[in-house]
Image (tube, rainbow, N blue to C red; front, side, top):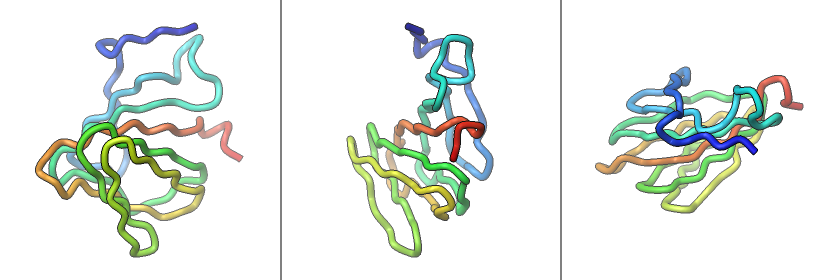
Length: 115
């Protein structure tokens, strides 16, 4: 078992993101998960990402606040404990349109393990 304390999580910068601080909770370390990594993203009001797509799926889980997810011009608002899966190749944009920080878990497979 690998325990990683929140205070030991490292900041990472995701491409094409703004107004966000990302922390890597698990992944990319010896003894960590073999297939995916877990990030904790804190989006400030007006923060977001995209539009872009990846060759692998992503899972978003909103823990606090809300996030608007836009796929194929359709907008969906995720609130605490709502989640979504973004399919490989699916173009998505996410925006925090509220005045509260959105705290979100992100689960992503390692690039080498993507189908």
